[in-house]
Image (cartoon, rainbow, N blue to C red; front, side, top):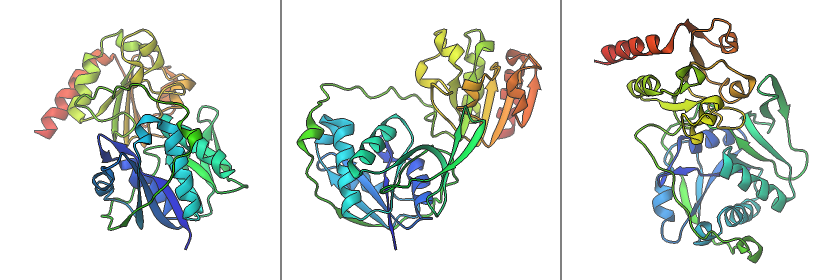
Length: 317
């Protein structure tokens, strides 16, 4: 059976749900081998967290070059493993790091690449949403080993326990992959809320907040949700750019997306319209986001959200 390589995705030294999503898609095409790129001495611990999804094997690659040389070293190692395993396809998470790694892997393998897929069939046909999400495209790589990046939260993951066999794979990071050196780095500051792209519920605020995100945050915390923001809100300095949802920000696809005071420009819709359920709270009944929502509330978010927060808290109690 064919082997499909996935790059295990980690956050805070633990595999994310995205890893299981990649494995779920990869299992349609063959046996899944999850590649764990780790600093020397930490491979086994990281591999132990890759515990869910239809994963047949785990290949651990240890090198301090991943920390000192970043993306180039990671891509070099992944390409070597894909070649050694005779991979039928390579799947990577579609975030900033993943897409850069995938691009370099495609060049190393002299293969085609598809980015931002929301699904991939057993025949390696990828589904993409383009032109701000207004058009669905089905595409496939016609040369080399398909390298595909998959948007987090796009597919329902198989979260069954994995009992994959683990092996350590030796690779030699090339000199060309060591030309750039990371002199310093700082991990992102983590709060108590879920990571935006991983969250199953996202509550976002926009221009209608007038810079006051207190009601949005309170409602999000009651739901155990991540907080997002429109570009208008982040450009105004009301919320960090790292929380921007949209074409020039992050793409999210949660089970529930609540848009508060966001009109719904095409750029914002491109980053959230694959959400399973969309709820809109806006005092403007003509707001474009009402066109794609599942439930809409025409009203001032400062009146609606406190009532919703109270009701959710009461239901949970």
